[in-house]
Amino acid sequence: MEVACGIMYDNMGNILMGLRHERGPNPNYWEFPGGQLEDDETLEECLKREWMEELHLHIHIEYKLCSTNINNIICHFYVGKILDIENLQINVHQYIGFYPKTHIYSLRLFEGDKDIVDKL
Image (tube, rainbow, N blue to C red; front, side, top):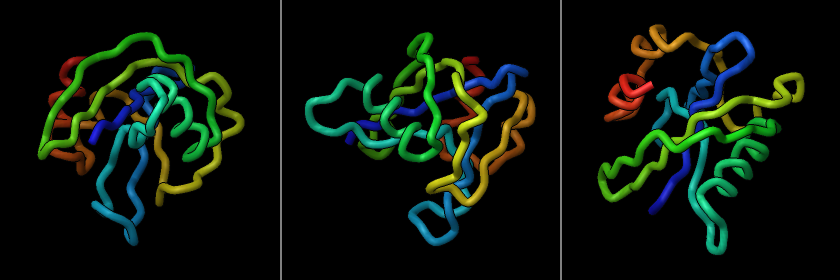
């Protein structure tokens, strides 16, 4: 399975993080929002689609940071900017927060995500 994840900054330089819902898979973990690649779409298209579905936000992707492979899930991490923060809607997460990079280390993250923060 391939997944595209977005490390997206607001105008203040904080990163948007989503808290996975307590009633879904992997509850109460913080994540860089994104989702599973569908047939006939690029990773960038996937990420933009997922951010619109989950957060009702348009994003600008600046560059691909890295890819990881944990438990046969290949995660592609992209860095960019949120274009229309005023349109934010919480559609799938339990909570959304904006955090400086240093604060993200204190959140309950998926295996390997602290390594991603180190690369920023």
